[in-house]
Image (cartoon, rainbow over all chains, first blue to last red; front, side):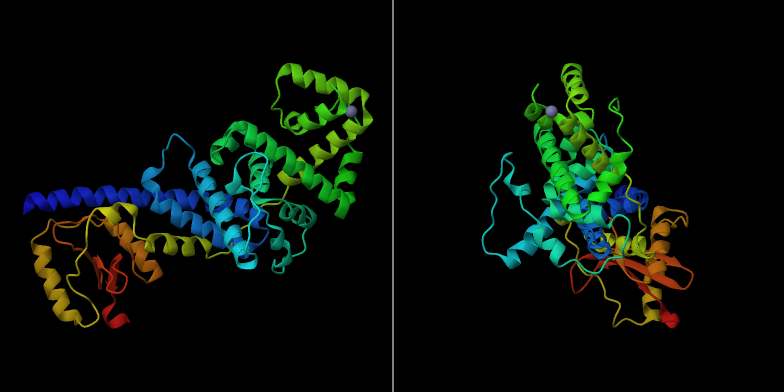
Length: 206
Length: 174
Ligand SMILES: [Zn+2]
């Protein structure tokens, strides 16, 4: 009786530690996760739903988390995959066939999100609006790669790690994604790209 | 390097992901080619626009909502491990008789440390006034409990979902 009570207590403590640890990580990372999700979805409500779903999944698979990786990298992987799932589900509701043709051999990521801009809910007019619109015009897997690099400041190798793909694929996604962002911005709000560019006439830059 | 080759490497160049040789070849080309240089400047601008987006805060209650959503889920460890059998439900049990039952059980257990994780978790749960998932893998009694002030908590399976929950009986407060 006393032996089983002690054993029970030990097991309880381990589980409680796990919970406490996750709770701490959640508190530390929920804000940056929200901002990443906000740029991924372009919408506060969708961002909150996405982060919530990602944390629920993360907790469910917390035993699989290898803490040699930063927790956010692992969380962002789940978050990005969840986002793709949601986009795919939304798209499936609207169309019967999916065009998953792609050039870099990762069909699961290659699903466009062009409907997103159409059914986005009202968002406050901000300075970031043109950029956010441009982001929503590109495929979610390009968007993820570019955001991880430019918003989160990750190197390609780290992006590859988060997206569970090769550095070559990351390079291709960022190349195509940023190129499309530039084209979208030049078409829809040229001043946003040109105004800043005007200050960069210096060819010795970089 | 011709313009096409340069443009294909331009984003990697912007991200400083190229080796010295490629980087040098591109730098040289950009110095002499205004079309490629213009594209380069625009790509740098796009990168800076993305990096400069203003961080926004989530709603005030967001963290609390996350906690509730996350800890209502049954942890993966319990899915395969232990089956929880209902010992008793709170709906039909009077507070007095339940307190008596728990009092008996208290005597058969080591005293609970009020600063333990269990106690802290329970405080957290009570903040939100609703049951939350307990992660205690209790295969012996299928019940763990904690008495705090006038509240009684018990860990057990939720009758409807089968998910293990910490239930709180609020007695007169409710
Ligand atoms: Zn050129």
